[in-house]
Amino acid sequence: MEQYYKELLRFLARRLGNSHDAADIAQETYARVLDRNGGAAIEQPRAFLFRAAINLSLDLRRQQLSQATLPLDLQAESQPCPAAGQEDRTYRKQQLSRIDRALNELPDNCRKAFLMRQVEGLTHEEIAVRLGISRDMVGKHIVRALRHCRLRMKAWEGPAA
Image (cartoon, rainbow, N blue to C red):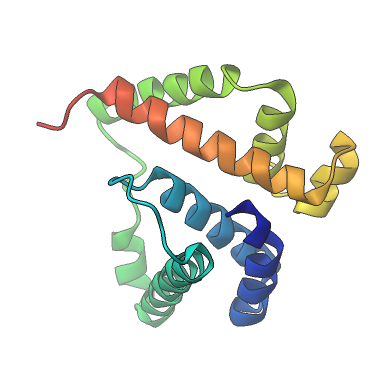
């Protein structure tokens, strides 16, 4: 399915009109498709991938529209309270520690590509130049990092209650 990444990215950029959102949706799409339960073979992987991307882009649009139409006071209420309790801060600190552990398990370039994208907000092209690798490889690294972090976080959370 990795052979469709460039095509999917171009499609999403046209659809969303924003290359950052397109890259985020493409990464999320690959992560979800790779992470999906039920290991049945996908008969039409390209169609499956594009449908998943369309669904995620629609979710993003709905979220953007709902935030844009909320009055300012309701937007403020929809944001988490900055004065969260000690329990919440402890949980967040634990989650950050787990993410840090998961990222440190990754190969160096994979971790760097993920952090450059998610933390620094760099484009795939900028990351490729900095790391001296292809844009395709940047996408593969980011998808691998997302998948790895999700799997590790699920494992550390334990079985659902």
